[in-house]
Amino acid sequence: MSVRLPDEEHIAQTEESLRTHYFADQRPWVVAYSGGKDSTLLLQLVYELLMDLGPTACKPVHVVASDTRVEAPNVEEYLADRLSRLAGHARANGLTFHVHRVQPTPEQSFWGNLIGKGYPSPTRWFRWCTTKMKIKPSRAVIDGIVREHGGVVLLLGTRLDESADRAQRMQGRATNSRGLNPHGEIRDALVMTPIADWTTEQVWEYLFTRNPPPWGGTHNFMLDLYRQASGGECPVVLDLNTPSCGGSRFGCWTCTVVKEDKSMRGFIDAGAT
Image 1 (tube, rainbow, N blue to C red):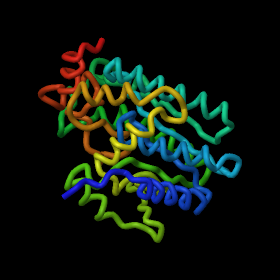
Image 2 (cartoon, rainbow, N blue to C red; image 1 turned 135 degrees about the vertical axis):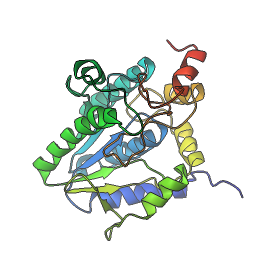
Image 3 (cartoon, one colour; image 1 turned 180 degrees about the horizontal axis):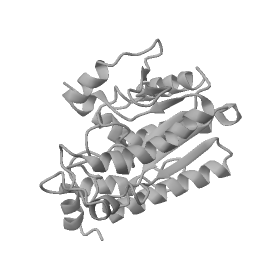
């Protein structure tokens, strides 16, 4: 069976769906961004929508990216550069676009818990690092937006094509008339998955053909990261139902959940510093 690449009709359908949802209510959008391929695709689609809407873009869009402070140095540098370019380009173009690089407090940090509080190293059964280093910092920002506006729509780059388990979870969620589902742990938050029906091949095709992104720089470094290491990207984690980063490309260099950090090995073998 042939693979359907992201032809213009498919892209246009996703763009039109985003436009319709944007004007459907006054809830601000929160885009979860990890720096990986899926969240980068989602972010670019949303950002291009805001650029197209211009002065008619009436409600704010927030981007939340998690920096655990123990990312691989090359990934941390890349994420910081992307977010800086995004913030600068949005300001220069007068977009209602807000960038949040969230980090754990000292009390939430890996070393603060491991050494300061005497926590055991994280395991699959006691994954305290995810809660303290990712969920709580991200939730603090999102909860603040909810308090200010009364609710949010959370945009996630999850796709049915990622795995059978992911597809089953996504398809099993109750949705409203617009196809959005309530977030299980964040009050007054609805979840939208605009690229749910995109295949992995379609994601890569878009990123290769729509490079550079509108905020400047290129996707080349991210594409090179995927060539250097194996596995999937580490998602922005907002609840414990999200799979851990263990074994993924953009996990923490301190991760004790996996037997072998394949991403770090790939970076070293590729000569990353």
